[in-house]
Amino acid sequence: MKSPYVVMLCLVVLTSCTTKQKKKAENQEDYKILEMKNFLARMATNDSLHGVVLIGKNDKILFHEAYGYIDLESTQKHTIESPIGMASMGKMFTAVAIFQLRSKGKLQLDDLISKHLEDIESNILKDSVKIKHLLSHTSGLGSYWDELNETDSESIDLSYIYSLVKNDSLSEFVGKKMMYSNSGYILLGKIIEEITGLDYKEYIHQNILHPLQMENTDVFLSDGGGHTTTENLWKFANAIKNGKILNRKDTKVMTEKNPLGNYGYGFMVKHINGVKVYGHTGGYWEENTKLGVAAGLDMFDNGYILIILTNRNPSEGGKKIRDYLIESLSVGDNPSIN
Image 1 (cartoon, one colour):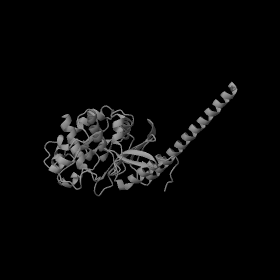
Image 2 (cartoon, rainbow, N blue to C red):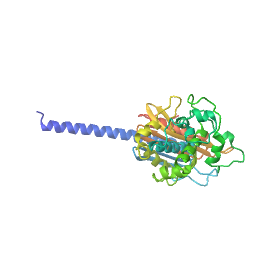
Image 3 (cartoon, rainbow, N blue to C red):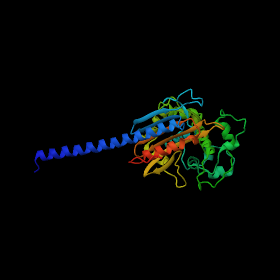
Image 4 (tube, rainbow, N blue to C red):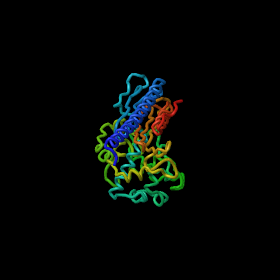
C-alpha cells in the first residue's frame, strides 16, 4: 500500500504539470493574439484596413478593435459598434431559415423547387432543380446581376428579382458542378415566403435576429446585403456553434463540405492545417472608388471565431488580412508574417 505522503506528492506533481501546461497554452495564445494585433496595426497604418475585427474563442472575446475611417475623407472613424455592409454573408441567414423550416417538416432538401414555387414554367427548373441544389450552388443557375437594368436601384425587392430569374435557363447540368449563384438564393428566399406567408425580411427578423438580440442587423435580400456589426455576428456565430437556433445535427449537415466545391449548404467550408473552418465571406465594390465591402465570418473547430467587417474594396487588403488571420488561428504555432 502506497504511503499517503507518496500519493499526495504525486497529486502535487500532476497538478503542477497541468498548471504549467495550461499556462504555456495561455502564453502561446497571448503571443498569437499579440502577433495578429501587430499585423492588423501595420495593415491599418498602410491604409489597408478600415473596419472592425473581432477574435473570440469558446464564448470569450479575445480581441475586438476598430481601425481607420468610415469615409474616404478620413473624417469619421470606425468604432467597434460601426454597422458595416455584409454582402453575401447574408446567405447564411437564408440557409438557417431553410433548415429551420426543414426541422418543422415544412420542406425537405430533396424537394423539387417547383413543389413550393408553382408559378415556375421552365420545365428544366420544374423537373430537375431541388432545394439542396440551390443551397449548395449546384443548380446550374447564374447571377441575376446580368439581368438588371441600368435604371434598377438598390431598393429593388425580392419579388421583382424573382420575376427576372424564376424561368432562367441553366448554364450547367444540375448537380454536376458548383457554380456560385445569387439567383439560386433568390429562389430560396421566395420559397421561405411561400411556405411561411411572411416577407423574407420579416421571417429572418422574427426567427433569427430578434431571438438572438441582433438589434443592429438588417437584411436586404435572400442572397445577401444589409448591414451588421461584429458584436451581432458574434452572437450569431455562438448561436450556430452552440445549437441555439438550429440543433447540432442540422448544423453538422449544413456545414458538411460538398464534394463539388468548398461549400456546404449556405456555408463555405474548408480545412486549414487540419482544422475545419466554416462561415461565409461578403464582398462588393463601387466602381471608380475604394469603397465597398470585404467581410467574413469564420468558425473554427478548434474553438476560435473570426469576424472581419470592412467598408473598402476587397482588393485594398481584405483578402490578405483574412487569409493571414485564418492561418494564424488554425495552427498551434505562429505562422510567419510576410
